[in-house]
Length: 148
View 1 (cartoon, rainbow, N blue to C red):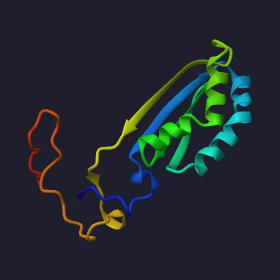
View 2: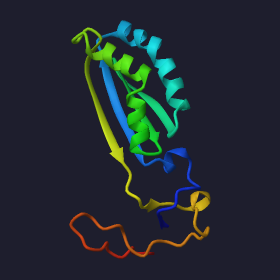
View 3: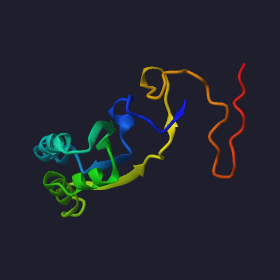
């Protein structure tokens, strides 16, 4: 089930670049103010070439975060340069802690290989198990997968 072919996977499985970030807002009014830029930004992101999928998460009391997937790192970085995203980032950061008190962004890229099975398997449709585990960074080869 180890593969480099993700053509049958859902959109987020086809992505090779992922963004995760969060903003801790200064309070409920700052969170509400974000709506002015948020919805146009999401519409713009969904229309951009390379967008695959996103979700939003909330952490009490004032943190909102986003996880977004793109076809590749260039597509993700083009979104970061987009008008609505720039406006939101400037509003969050240009006035000290008036609008946001903390935030982070992490960018990830996918290894070319991964795993698939069932209806998301793109090669030959077989459900054969892998003979070895993927090696750790300290291993030349992964150990044999023990089957019951």
